[in-house]
Length: 260
Image (spheres, rainbow, N blue to C red):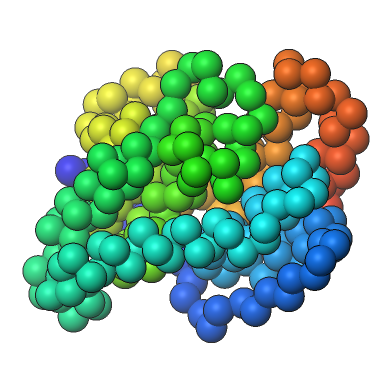
């Protein structure tokens, strides 16, 4: 749990980049132009489902035969199973009246126990750990990929979750009325207390204000980190031919999102 000032600070920023809107309609072709798909996706980033579109387009540059809608279908299927199991908890009015702790417990069961979402040091060294479609298939991915799975499903359930771009380890914040939790999806849903978070941040830079580090990660932070992870992983795994692609997408990301 965190101080009211920290919660208020986060509350002011939630939704700045990911605010509910009407679903973005995607067109799929037999031969997808993944660069065009990425450019289109980042021009319409308002929800976590939009961010999913963007990272799927990134993955398409490695796996051209990737089914563009497959990750969204998987994510919605998981959310649907949770809603069907506890319909009395999965409504905005129920969350407003009772909080989201009960619904969150069922969501954790679905993604961490049933799906097996999490990560390990070995998978982190391979580009597949940044391919959301493969992460959903295997349950193994980088911290930021596991966090996007978490946030995207939470969004579908009406749970107020957001990414935390902590140095060295991407995390998720969950705001429930007057309290807030920090969740480590890479650590299979482990809760991170305030002192551990402070230690994590200060291990990289003691001048960083932990409360500011709790601010919801903007779209640019998500995609910049995602692509830089791929630069490192592809260089290590013998896929250096893709480095110019990631550099080009980074430049396009900054061009489109840098002024937001």
